[in-house]
Image (cartoon, rainbow, N blue to C red; front, side):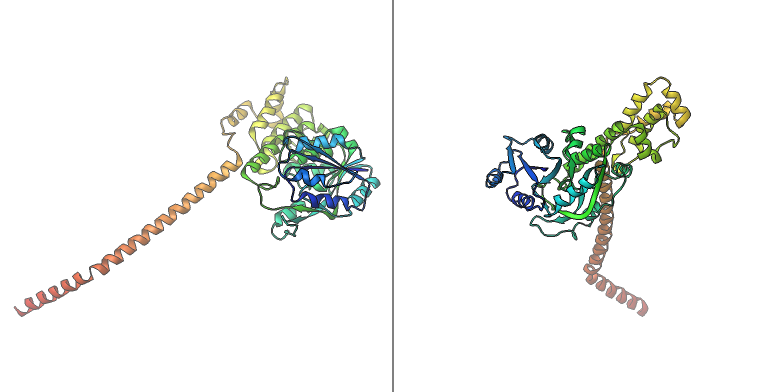
Length: 389
């Protein structure tokens, strides 16, 4: 059996289509655990319309957000596999059949995903409007080390509502980390990868809604962008903590400060450098690296290793503390944008000033024309008088 966990909040208009796509699965061996996370619209009334013994609804008195609700659903799951559905997206009818078949045939694989079709608010195909999102989810398969390296350098690229995970894997690693709101699934995929293989079916088995709306949990806003950056930083630190030394060398050894690092102290230093120097541009953050550096330097003899193996003196670390660590990437980009705007405005002002000066000069020339005509007549008359004398 597949236990499907679907968490919802105020989705009375879209949840019906999601549930119907689950009930239309060619694989009928499933249970649907719906956690209504304190909806205040007509979602509960919509759910109560379904008379299907395979559907179990849990109603929260108030909103607790996704991770808490999903963990409750996972605890209620009794199937061999757990699939994560959403109240926005739609499954193709053969989704579970194909994914369960793959997991059955590949016991070494702990989770299977699929590609997706981007759909709009009304279910229409919107892939031509969002080519970047299409490319994001159009992923080839990789080894575990390659997946982790991709996550470290770039970020998440797996569709949450396309996932099916072995329940035994979730029992071993735990459910969602309650701290994360934007990247909770990303953090979960990392912990799964540290334990087992994953696979992406090349079929598009999910209609993934993507549209600009503050009501959509994945819709971008400035607050969510900032939260994503902060969560990515914390997840990167967590990844380095969870990886064994062997995994660290396999996954990120090609990004080491010293390619020959192998001793425990050297690898701890590499973890610190990776936090400061490597990865997606907005996820390089000296503070986390310096915190890690502080931990390593407490080890007797660590300062000597830092100097001999990495050619870094303590003074070099002190210089890093003289920099601004708490100006985030978005703020820097905003300041750069404002500076560019100021330059543009100054240029436009100079252009207006030149144009204004030209107009004023032209108007003065036109306004003084009668006077200049009179002056010319006077000059000619005076010249004639002088000649006559």
